[in-house]
Structures are given as structure tokens and as C-alpha cells.
Image (cartoon, rainbow, N blue to C red; front, side):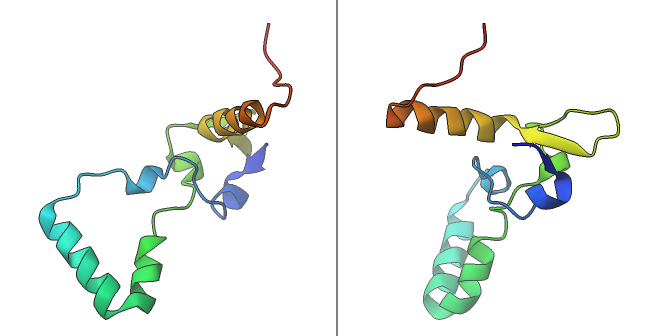
Length: 94
């Protein structure tokens, strides 16, 4: 689906690109503390990097020269996999 970068940033990222980093034991301990002591704040921290980065992501591709509309290659791959698992006909390129 073609989206503008502003509309894409309102959607959840399929790959959770922003969450992919090295987690040390100290970071995990801090996260558990916040989850137990302040669960209402932890929810905000949990979803902080879960949204689409749009034009800041390497998987985002623009379709025009003005760079106004584009798509996420990972989201497209994810959608095709869902169709295949549901047993529906998957469009293939020749």
C-alpha cells in the first residue's frame, strides 16, 4: 500500500526496526524495575520504538521523484506471507 511518510509514521512497524539493538543485563534490569514499579509509564516506553520510521528506514522505498509516496518492502513481504498462510492465491511476478 502506498503511503505518505506522515501517514506511515502512525502505523506499527512490522519488523520493529527501532527495537533492534543489543540488550545488556543492566538494560533488562532497568526495564523490569520500570515494569514492576511504574507499569503505566512502562507502557509508554514499551511502544516508543514500535512505530514505522518511514523515510528514515532502509526498507522504505519511494515510487516518485518528489519522494512524496512510498512503501515498506518488509510490510509487503509480510502481507504476501499472510495471504500464503491463509491459503489464498498469492500474486507472483513473472
